[in-house]
Image (cartoon, rainbow, N blue to C red; front, side, top):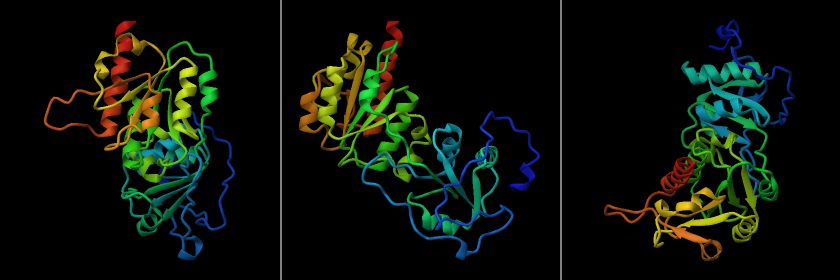
Length: 302
């Protein structure tokens, strides 16, 4: 499958200079795609999960790996592709971009990929990469800007599927940065990366020691802190002129909602009206509705 792609013209303007592989001695031996590696060539160690930092060293799933390459924001050490995988536009893209960027591609058994994977369905593709780089909140707030900021802060969300879906909608809505607490919150795991469909490669993400203090810092910088809360008297559709200001939207975990300290730091609370029998929405759906409502209001008011 890989050999017949060498004759295809390079249509992407991607860096073509050689990269150091940065491979660890336990990683699979570099091979040609026409061969299958011996089991003795590959180490079985899983990536070490870091307690601090964003993570993101292992990316799984076809779209997530494709966006990892297209984003070109961090080094990709190697890509594993199942040796029984069928050709498709996404797989063809991955192979072509990897070749253009001189990223080594390893042809391994599907069982090997599933054993290494930490998400439920890696789709026969995973990549090893440098960790995601954090954006410093202080730098973000101090940077000159010609339009109001839209930030999203995550309070106590620990489900990786929910976080990935939130990040995907934040990228779609043009959110300037996502704020994640350093502790008691999920960061960028393979499941988050896959659920985000590659959004992690484009979003600015800040990891903060404590969310309440970070919210205070944002307020001091002139942002309006809006918390989503089911019991709020005002709806997200009634923010009015507030939407034109620089805003940090705070999302709480499903069930508990906003923590007491985060709630106390909010300038105002807003709900999403529930007109049916259920009392709340999935947090990622709430994130999508609230961010796009702010974007819609800003566009209408121009």
